[in-house]
Length: 354
View 1 (tube, rainbow, N blue to C red):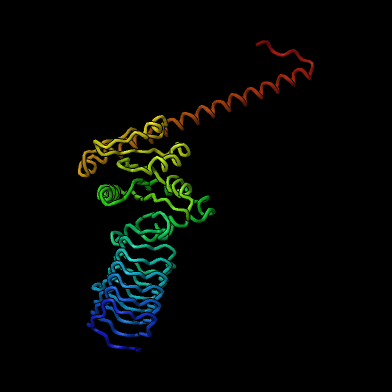
View 2: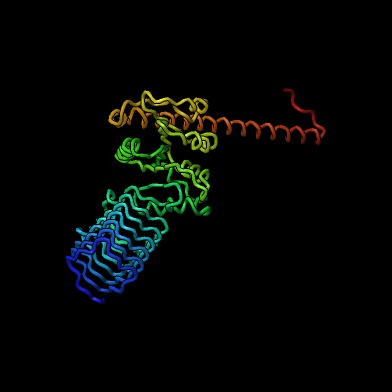
């Protein structure tokens, strides 16, 4: 069916698995939930097509063309070949791009919010400055606890840090802007934590979200510690967050130079936190009334206390360095004096009186 004309057709939930549809035309075609697994669709036209929740796993889409009216929301593009595809303006929000090939792909103005991009091969991409279109990218596979970041470049960087020990050892500059947010992101809490993330972005910070979910496929201790170690500070929402004690147990004792700002909705009990309050890196709990109250006071509730804590830490570190230098100087002078006295004795001279 090479160069088939299927413009405007209704192919909802149609199975085209393994179909040979190279250079076919699907302009304004309804392919909602269609099954196109392993289909060969090189150079096909999808301008204005609706592929919402379509299954395009391992489909061959090299040089395929989409436009700003093309809808691929929630589409499964796992392992798909999108090399040199024109996706400018298309909506791929919440799609699965795990292990997809994007070589020379045009992603200018493409909406990727909420998409899973674990393992993608991304080279020579054509991008734009619309960072808002590439937020909340999931960089872990489906069977692991989600790690969510903004921007493709940041996503690839964080993924490399999580999985490449050599890169970890030489990169230490990210800590100036990264903020780790801990909490449980089920629907009731998600609105508050998403709003907090948006507000932190306005202050030129890079929020990194870790939604703890038990998994036997990854060392969660390593993940939590690595994300914390690359962050300027940590915000831990204690509200109905049963996993927080476990997460904090991997951070607080091991990273005393990373401040933790716990927040808690008023009226919510949390009796397991007292154990951590003895650590200098743990700030007092900030109680907020509701989402709007938290956002309106983000500077006084989070940013300013963190800034004050960091200044105290820096001052303490500087004082410690001065004391260490003074101690070294005193030790060196003592050693020189001892050498001089030993030489005087060797010469049979009388040591000077004290």
